[in-house]
Length: 133
Image (cartoon, rainbow, N blue to C red; front, side, top):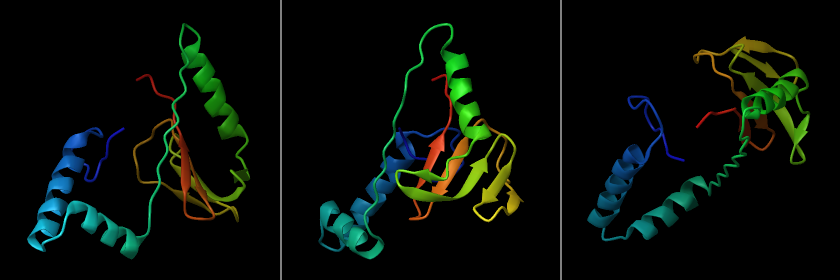
């Protein structure tokens, strides 16, 4: 699904990740190590990271309406937990607001978009966004 390391590219793609991969590989090669050695070193220092993307398909003439209804349900009734973990803050990019579990509301600086993002107590997050792609 791509990576967007810096915002000079307008969309996530493999180009930025490829350049970073080459830079990391060259750095570790200069130390007489393989990329795998370097990756393990990074894991030991920063921990492991897991990402999972789930894409649902809503085909047909009513697909956009179905997606809209689902995100509206999440927007109208924010979940308290996801996967057994407490939601500690929620971001609604269509309203440019972030709400914490204690009710504090702050403004988000990002452009408005039809995206909801839920931050969980363990530092992980879940984002929901309808897409036409």
